[in-house]
Image (cartoon, rainbow, N blue to C red; front, side):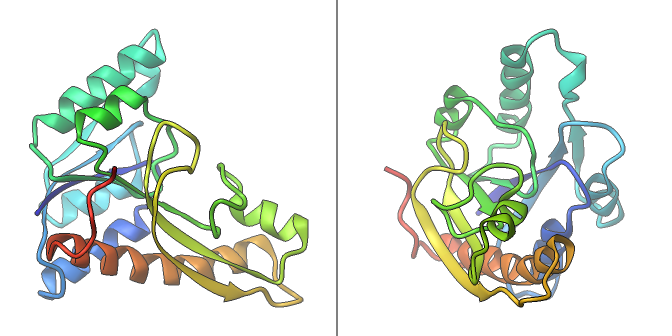
Length: 193
């Protein structure tokens, strides 16, 4: 199974996938890693691992639609079976998702459908939940919507702050992402409807 991974930041989930592939625990080919801006550590990690990288800089396009089309063209050039949003902080269009048969995988640091959006961890803490977690799902044109593939819950400690909770969620998120990719590669996860 060929994947293209999209990142916007440090690429810690990406590193877990790279490590699992190298260890023979995950039978996928990372065809390329792309970012929406220059200077991301996720791109540096990929370069260090010998993985092809690209940047389609959001700020280099006059409109979101033009950026989205350019990103879709670049991703398509790698012929991925699945596109993985791994901390990718840009919303792509319905046309982008349709171009890849809806096979656009996303991770989110909350138990969707609760607390969608860029601040899922903060929003969960502000609400006062005692349990949160992470979700891996097929993305659609909404914000953190789409069919859920896997979730795992995590108890929130009374003294928890956003950073400490997010770090604990990331540990689960990495494991869950690798498990979902493994099941996808084995044909155990149905394609999105």
